[in-house]
Amino acid sequence: MGERPAFDFRGNILRALADGQLRRNLQSAMDGLIRKRRAVFDDPAELEALRTVGQSLKQAALSRLPALLEELEANCTANGIQVHWAETAAEANRLVLAICQGERATRVVKGKSMVTEEIGLNHFLADHGVEVLETDLGEFIIQLAGEPPSHIIVPAVHKNRDQIARLFHARIPGAPYTEKVEELNAIARRTLRQKFFEGQVGVSGVNFAVARTGSLCLVENEGNGRMCTTVPPVHIALMGLEKVVARLEDLPPLLRLLTGSATGQIVTTYVNLISGPRRPGEKDGPRELHLILLDNGRSRILADPELRQTLQCIRCGTCLNHCPVYVRIGGHAYGFVYPGPIGEVLTPQLEGLARAGVLATASSLCQACGEVCPVRIPLPDLIRRMRTDGACQGPGGPEDGCRPPLWESLAWKIWALVNTHPGLNALGNALLGRFGRRLPRRGPLAAWSAVRTPPRFAPKSLHALAVKEGLPHE
Image (spheres, rainbow, N blue to C red):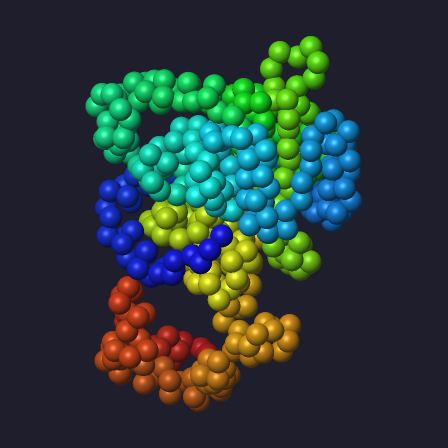
């Protein structure tokens, strides 16, 4: 896929924080999504029971993932679906290109898919002369703007109505300037409708794949996904290995969790179950259906008993909506496809700690992401794991016995010594009370105090005040 540009996380954050309009857009959108989720999950006990079911289903599938994938391949093949395996993003891109070239296709219509964003499919195909049109409204908006998604579920969440109106007027030939939502939707619908019929290949993601029936489940609200998977003569579906479930009976609780958490709906407008290409006598559907199963580091994640919980993710985006950091900086600041708490855990595992480990610092560890995750991924614990692994010096990681930097070990030893010896503790408190306000704001403390109000140390400790008042103490 070529060398990616340097990643300046700090610079991204500072630019995002300086954009007042971005923060207002994000706050408004996140507040709305949170309200919708609360309304659809209005019974806390029922929600907790449902979360337990979802967690169990995902963990059960991951515990026997290789067997389920083989079962999925066998049943998909029996249904007429051509199954391909891709170990890397580059291999997945080459498979898609080969299918397009076999059809002599130069135009692809594409439904919303995070895994295609993960592998950089659009840019890869464009570099090889294949035009890709995003048909999801949010993806269509950011494609016009030349931007990546800012959110897992709502790709254009960072833009308000006025910005979208100006974008449509500037980038769509003949589009009038209007700020009415209905008219903006109509402009997008007119633009996209003809493209569906011109598309030679349709590309989609997969929300869940059912091993026992060889079926692909896609959920959506706009109908564009259904058009992408039925109108073009060839449909290519891409999915990460972790999206497989064992039985059709597993889908209802997972769909309820996904749609309720993602968009605040009991069920989306369209729930598509695809079990093969068009058969004789059927009036719609592709004549060829390809399924590409992507690894791209997932097998490595699966092998770690703690980190495999990352693969429980159903891509609902609710951890982003509740994250105080994401709400202030938006998805683009994270610099990679997956932002927010799940991105802080998943991206370093996909991209490497050396490149993306800094993402784990973008968390206050307030626990909100873990409390709302519909499948109970312990995101705060995994964020701490990423921080620990990222801070560990040495090529082998903590498992090989590497240690934190010497200064850090020494600092913690001094802290432990002071806080386990009453005399030293009293001396330390007295020194802080007398000189704490004069601590220099340069050197090691500069970065900390630049974005925080320095603490005000009391002249006397609580223990000293208690002694002065004659209160009993030990």
